[in-house]
Image 1: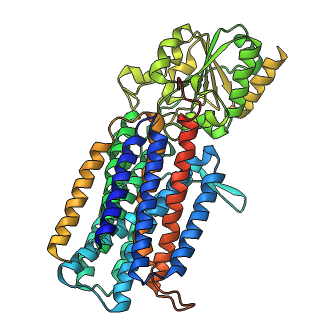
Image 2 (image 1 turned 30 degrees about the vertical axis):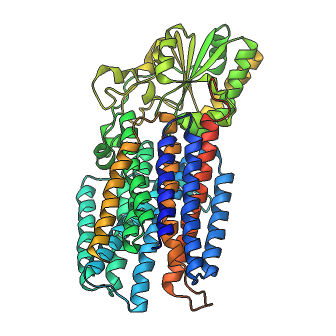
Image 3 (image 1 turned 90 degrees about the horizontal axis):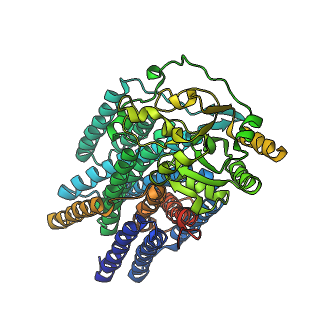
Length: 471
Length: 103
C-alpha cells in the first residue's frame, strides 16, 4: 500500500471516530453523521484514486455498482415513511453484512480461479477470516431480514397477511451452539483443502440458518435490541473481511462499529431493564408465562371521555406501541389542537424511553404529525407533573405505565414507568384488557378513576375528536 | 503476508475495539435509533473491499465469478452507505433538528 493511501484511510478512520462520538450527543448528532459520511467519501475516493494511479482500473463494474447502489439507497432513504424507519435500518444492516461476506467470498473465488491459493500463515489467516466473515455476514443478512419482517408484524403474500411467527422451544438453544461449532469445524477443515468450495458453501448455508433461528424466538418488542446487536455483528464482519484483503480501513471502521454497537446494545437493554442473554435465549413474554385475566372492567365511550376533558386544565398524552401500530399520530395531533383551542387546555406528551418499537420511535412519529418539539417531555421530567394533571390519555401503552413495576417483583420489577396513575383521571385507549409484552396484568386498568376506551387507536381517536367537536 | 503485517492488523483490530467501547458512554434514548443507523452506515466500509474486488475487466458473458460477486457487494454496500447516512440525517432532523427546545 502506498503511503498516501494509508494516510487517506487514516483520515477516514479519524472522521469515523469523531463522527461516532458526536452522534451520541443531541446537539452534535447531525454534525457527527456528516463527519461519518465525509469519512466514507474520503475512503472511497482514496481507493478509486489509488486504482486509477496504479493504471489498472476497470471502470465498468465499479461505476455501474456505485451508480446502481447509490440510486437504490437514495430512493429508499427518501421515500421511506418515518414510521417505516426501524425496518429500513434493519434492511440496510443486512445489506452491509452481506456485502462484507460477499467480498470475502469473491476473494476466495479469485484465489481458486487464478490458481494463486496462498500458503502457510497467509492461508490460515485467509481461511479463518473468510469463514468468520461468512458466519457473521450471512447471519446478519438473514437475521436482519427476519427482524425487518418482525418489526412490520408480518408479510403480505398474494394479498394475504401472514403474521411473522415467534417460535423458540428451549431445545433450540443447544442447536444454535451446535451450528456455531459446526462452522468452526468447517473452517478448520477448509484450511487443509482451500480449493474445495463445499466447505465455504456449507458455512454460508449454516450461517443463514443460524441468523434465522437466532431471531425467530425473539418477540417484536425486543427487536430494537436485536437490530442493534446485528449492527454490531455487521461491523465485525467488515473487520474480518479487512484481514483477508489486508486493508486497515476495513479493520478499524469495522471493529469500531462492532464495539460501539455492542455498547449501544447494552445501553438499550438497560433502558428496558433486560439483560442481553435474557433477550437472546429466553423466550420472554411467551404464551406460557402470562397471567390469566380474572378481572373485568366496563368500557367507556367517546362522549363520556369528551365530557371529562371539557374543563380539564392540563392533559398529558402517553403514547405507546398502540399508537405506532394504528398510525394514529395525526389524529392525536388533531385532538391536541382541538382541546387547546376549544377548552384552552394545556397539552403535553409523556415519552417513555422505550415506548414503541424503537427508542425514539414516539418522537419520530409525533414529529411527523408536526407536534411541537417542546411538548414532548421525557419521562423523568414529566412524572412530577402528573399529580396536577386532570386527564392522562394513554394510547396503546401498557407495560410502560404498569404500576407493578414499582413493586419490585415480577418481570417488570425496577423498570422505570410513566406515573400516569397519579393523574386525576386516566383514559386508556386499548383494544382489550390483555396483558402487555411482559405478560403482567396492569392494575392501572382497574382503578376507579380509569376509563377504558376499547378499540383501535385510530378509530377511537377519530371518535373522540368528533365527540369533542360536538360539545 | 508476513507475521509482522498480521500482528500489525491484529493490533489495529484490538485497539479499535477498545476505542469503540470507550466512544459510546451515555446516550439519551431518543438518539439510540439514529446512532445505530449512523454506525450501521459506517459498517458499509466494506465498500472499499468490494471496489478493490470489482476492479476486474468486464467481458460480456465471461466476467470472472469473483468480479460478479464483488459487483453485487459494491451495490449492496453502496445502498447501505448512501441510504444509511441519508436516513440517519432525516431522523436527526426530525428528532433534534429545527424545532429544538431553547435553540
